[in-house]
Length: 201
Ligand code: GAR
Image (cartoon, rainbow, N blue to C red; front, side, top):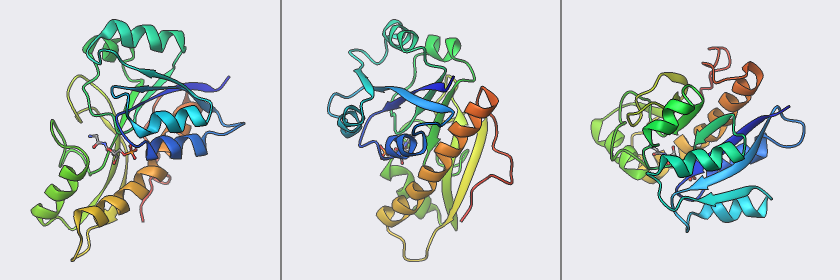
């Protein structure tokens, strides 16, 4: 029985697409639900176009709403893929160690409240860091804090713009996130990627 995956998004959903592409027929995991805090998230149309059920949260802070939707989908794994809100604490408690998040930097650096999207890449460039990358970690009650499961590193080029760095990191996210979900499906729960599998450029 494939692992039933709920994907939470706030925006365009390119990581969702990477997951849908990786988890096609015969895969040990399947995206059964896409949740969004925003009715205009581009990823919602994308999910519908691929026959995946969607739910727009009427109140993203309502644990009862989250739990109702996740339980009726029998979700076994929750993936935050560009989801920009805090998951309500009772949901984290109910799905402890079964919620993962992809972040567009090498945590623990460049994470925390307000650190999302292009803001992260601008901060990386401003710091003078020579590399950046993608992180997948377990979600707890605090933004970007839970244990790290896998990272993929990319170089920061001398003349990078935030947009170019973002595109390079996003490509790494698209490889890393499906690899972590497939490893979770094999193990039955999220696990750190073995270093041999850890993806680097
Ligand atoms: C991704 O880069 C993801 O890592 C980031 O939002 C983008 C969503 O893109 N998430 C965060 O910054 C969370 N802190 P997508 O909608 O195309 O997948």
